[in-house]
Image (cartoon, rainbow, N blue to C red):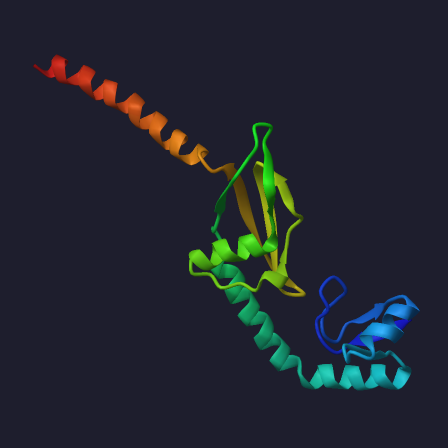
Length: 172
């Protein structure tokens, strides 16, 4: 069944996209909820005319999305989580967790536009933030054990201290 989306549907498409879905999904969910209309030839002509008239508005929306994506450029997240001895997380890191971490950095992002598989192990991952159908930003996400960052920071400080003491007697 071919439909024209009237609003963004997560996992399916964006507003004004023409998509193919199973008949039951279209008939029983998308059309009654007002999220889509049947893509008849007349509806396609109306869509084309509306898109032509709204081209400058769409360009402004895309520019705003690119601005938001540029604000996320260079942002890297480190998420501390409780971990078992085998490296498995107790629970998981989801798009909601990533949205909360971005909010702590002052970057307000809706959790629904973050594409990320549930993370269940310690390691490096990439979260994709889709601001517009043509604009997305990739945010590196590093998942570490809760106690690990403290140990990593303490180790270099201990190594530097003996080196300074060794230099002091030589200077005398």
